[in-house]
Length: 451
Picture 1 (cartoon, rainbow, N blue to C red):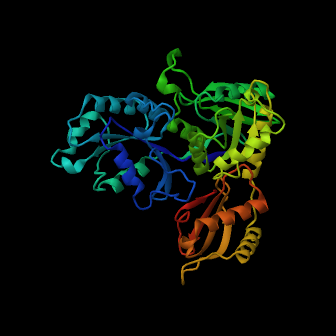
Picture 2: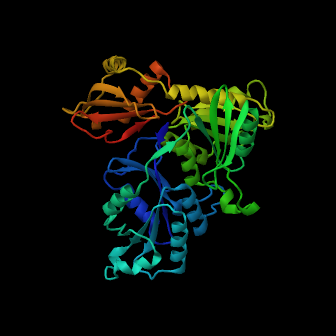
Picture 3: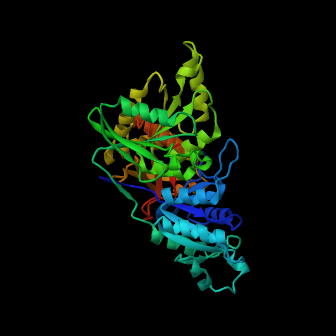
């Protein structure tokens, strides 16, 4: 079978060429941002966007840094990360400055990736007399002139990007479940990966990942093939290099998009870390299954009440994903490690639940009658009809009606809560698309991701 993979677009270049300004200019562009409800991922590093009805992740490498010590990736490491994990690379240079050696190095590394590369000549408003042909020496086509400040050239850049997007599918063996292991450095991801590989009934294959930063192994459990993706990564040339060992947004995004279910691993001795919440937000935005894995449980001094005392605090910090499954594990003792396989298969089953249209519409009528949506004067939203998407690996529902743009996000959450109460979907993200009856768009104006 094959499933959709949302492409990743990475913005790279030397310092001070306007990467972040370009990123922010695109965030403010009409039609680009597709999720703005509370709890969705929209920050200085990543955004999930859409243009011409095609979704993609936009990653600003200028914003990537380690949360603990503010270490910033070098340009070369940024490009390597982008080359490994992104589907399209924007190389940004500054129009008002002569091409530098750093620009040449960035261009060379980007082209070496064999990924589609677009040269973005930013700050073009300050150097309009320079012919674009002068930039051909970098060897990159197409060349798009932009001005992030004046918002010129942005539409052309997005149009070109959409044209360059690869076919967004992943071919995979029938019925295989892909599980990505994610988290900050040193929380026990690799140890969990190795323990899971030992706990399975039979190893099908061990192979290096398609990228330098993702290890994978295929195992069998209860008759099902499971592919484990470990984002801890392969050390380069046998050496521990600081940038490679640091958390990478782009590397995690790639693993998330390749997976069905994500294990977010957190150290039991170091909880309530904002970066963990950020990773959970990325998983939520991607519409994947999620298990919150508290690792190193054996190292915590505890009594019979410790588990119950810690759980509410963890749930509070991840209240934007209340549907996520929570489990305490130890790779040292093996506690609950096999249970992870069982939970993953349960979540996979939940994600494949299909509800017949007549039943869905009975549920919709009951839900709206129990609590009608509020509106503005003569703009009261009407919800008339509901179907489940058949071709989406994420449980997704289209709800057709009138004045749907006036629906408050709290009402959308109410609908999701009722839907989960009736049909479950435990451990899995779901999406609700609210569509005006006259709109022929594949989706509504934007998706409502669970919150």
